[in-house]
Length: 80
Image (cartoon, helix red, strand yellow):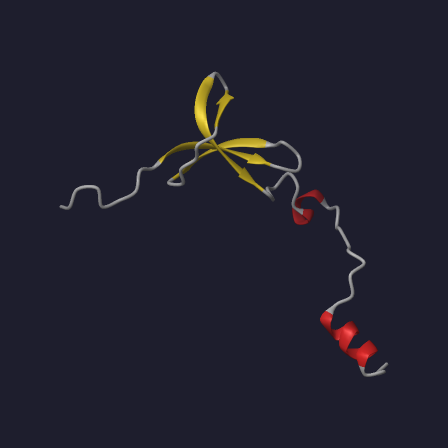
């Protein structure tokens, strides 16, 4: 069997950048940042969306006021 064929699998703390929610999971991703979590020091990876901030899990849907591609097309060519 070849040596060093598989990446290093280790415990990592993922942090939701919008809510601050933290959870511990295994990952092969590396990070230069560390964090104290439950009395241990782990590498920290920041993520934009977790179950704590995702609209499907929270029930809070966010709507933006930006026009979609179809609306822009209809406005440009005067279609209704």
